[in-house]
Amino acid sequence: MSSTRPVYLDLRKIQLPLPGIISFAHRVSGVLMVIGIPFALYLLELSLSGQAGFASARTLLRSPWLAPVLLLLIWSLCHHLLAGIRFLLMDIEIGVDRQTSRQSAGWVAGAALVLAALLLLELYL
Image (cartoon, rainbow, N blue to C red):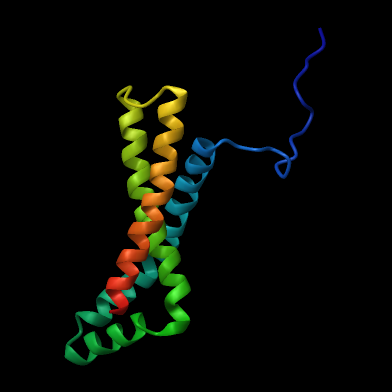
């Protein structure tokens, strides 16, 4: 009995549909949030240490060299939240057909970027 299964998969050649990309990004955003926990705890501890600590935490958050890191962490939070809601809705059989799944994946991708940009703008303004 011969199998038609591939011997190996070249991950660079696999073209995932948008819902698959969103699912993968959901996992990546979860990992990024876990990696960001020590930084968030440091900022919380610094900001609660007093007025001077709060001012230095605010200065640190507004520094331009930290902006890409903050953007990535804020995007991961927004994406993980929105994709998680999408997956919970799919668990209760809402939006499981192909067309709705593709549409909701597009909405999650776009809304996460917009929400992250708005939150970052709020931080810097």
